[in-house]
Image (cartoon, rainbow, N blue to C red):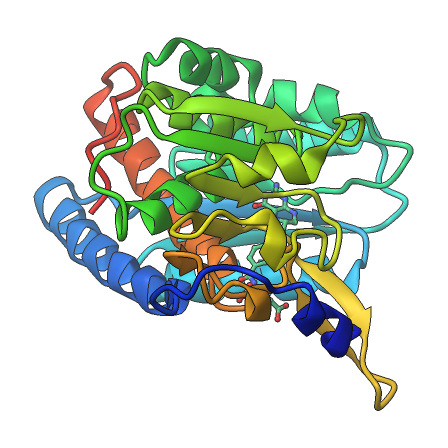
Length: 313
Ligand SMILES: Nc1nc(=O)c2c([nH]1)NC[C@@H]1CN(c3ccc(C(=O)N[C@@H](CCC(=O)O)C(=O)O)cc3)C=[N+]21
């Protein structure tokens, strides 16, 4: 990254230096609270929440995330069931496994790690997961529930973004929010959550014209473009809150790689608050997966309709 070029672009009023929102600490606190709720559930119902994680193929990054997810379930006192399938797995084989997990009373949450190999239609797989066990919130039933504000399981990364925002924003009503990226996994659901809080939401994407000008009007920016160092300091209004969802692996001078977000955080001294990468949205995504697994287990045990999520925190 050309840091001298970066510095040259800063020409903004002097305001308080921005807060870095510590996603690692927030996630650890959430996992601790979830662990207490899990213990209560085990004591009062005899049921231990269980999460099945399905990984097809050998993507090294997916491997790391799956191991993190499994480790965190253990910390929260949940059970995890790891299913590692070969790169050559057919769609029919994967659908058969999902059928088994749907029917397994010890499994309350099912996560199929994305992306899937090319021979498998990811949409068909997500459609096959029982909506009540869909802890990713990707099933059309849960997507529909989110869009109508009628409960259900909410995708983990957007939920984590809202919890990070909640640490610095008390009143969302009327704030201008700009979401960069229109993915089904982050952009669209986070836009719906912000809309639910009565923000004025703009969703931008690859074909958006004058993106910097649109972002300059935002009180809240959620950057989920998957483009390293896309969002520069001079795009950000003084006092804005910036959530960086990007996880981009870029080459390091010494030949290794490092993870950077979509935002040049070093240029954001004039923002009110910014999330770091790593240590921001990523750990919250995993903590929210546990929160969703607990919610799914609670709803499955009580036999109730999908619950409305209690206020975060
Ligand atoms: N069905 C499905 N659900 C997912 O939720 C899902 C998925 N597929 N496929 C891949 C993405 C990616 N993802 C991450 C989770 C945690 C971190 C995370 O904890 N990151 C750390 C460390 C980053 C690092 O150093 O590698 C951080 O940002 O601090 C990152 C990425 C979940 N995903």
